[in-house]
Length: 179
Image (cartoon, rainbow, N blue to C red; front, top):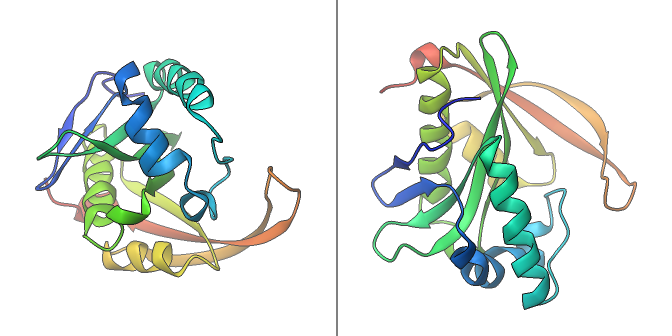
């Protein structure tokens, strides 16, 4: 794991660790949104009590993992999350990127993914892996616009419902990432 207190900034965003007060914006913007959860491996949070419990789990998780909330720089509002993990001595992979539906299509996903790849490179990473469900066209477009190259597909099982889906795996040489 890298610097657990790392705060990273892009043109429009701040990636930072969660605090308890983020529960409401994460609930309203992300966790309560079925369209955001559709291609992820987490379930929608049904109410504010669940969101308060979820932010506590998120805070605990982020203490020991390279994972952050995505916040709009101008307002400070939490509108998504992203994370990475070390896969090997010099390889890293994303552990998920999610943005609330009102924040998709603004270039935020690109800013998050590029910043996370720069972060991995700063920790000695040489290659980065990104996976997406084959049906998730927006995620595939994000991978391609950030210079990742399709490698292969594999069958995976959705832990929420046991259904099989096709995952596409993309790769990028981190030595070509700026910063």
